[in-house]
Length: 108
Image (cartoon, rainbow, N blue to C red; front, side, top):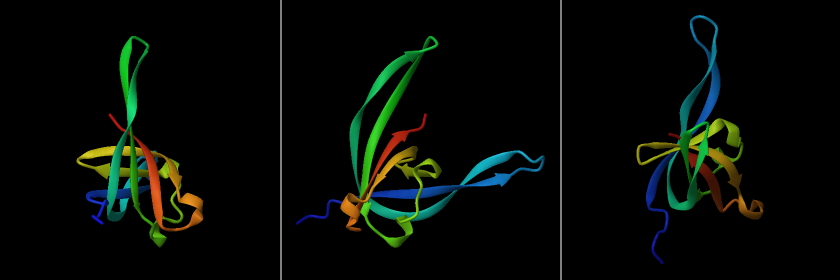
């Protein structure tokens, strides 16, 4: 059986940090570099305030590891092929700890 996890991704998590004048910003740091299956799940274009917006949704599936256990979707993103993807949902299927699927939306 061929290895299906052929794409390299970086999973990052955010922490809050203050700048020099006290503004709070999110700072992303690499959590793990791993191999994954990547699949585009479609997208859509919609019009809002006379502006065309695009959504590109992707599914990233990788092998489970302990580092992935505590990730919160709102504070995670994936970097793949030079693009950033905001994680919307994380699925450890039936809590089997075999693979983890990330549903993510590309940032523009």
